[in-house]
Image: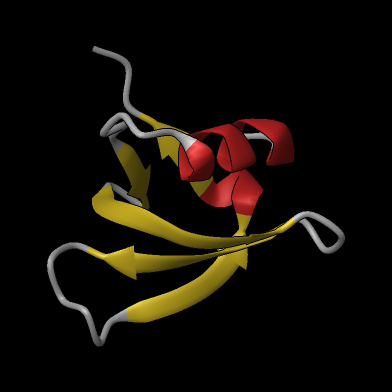
Length: 61
């Protein structure tokens, strides 16, 4: 995924499925300057990771 798409998904009011290494994630923050995103993995609010947006995959319907 590119940084612009990550920002679009983060700003969207729609529920857009995103995965990291096959696991569903919620984008909590996008750091455009560094190409990074902070994501919550699955439904575990304590499992938060900061990863390169290039590792995120949007799940097409």
